[in-house]
Image (tube, rainbow, N blue to C red):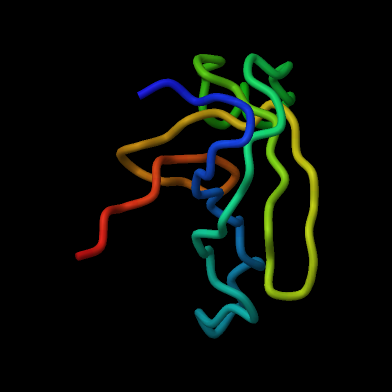
Length: 92
């Protein structure tokens, strides 16, 4: 599948840092996101952490407490690391 403007994808949030006791205030979560651009410029953090610029997207991420916009989000269908996007899993 090819991403296109207006499609729904999942954005993986980073979550908060792990505390010394091993807990987190917020864990990494999949969030619904709307594609706002295809071929977005890659952010420095994405290039360093993930090393790929294939299918970079601009996204409007929908969180329970609000929305945010992010450019240069790269695809990660396998590991689904924080700060990446993937196609939604099918639920029956």
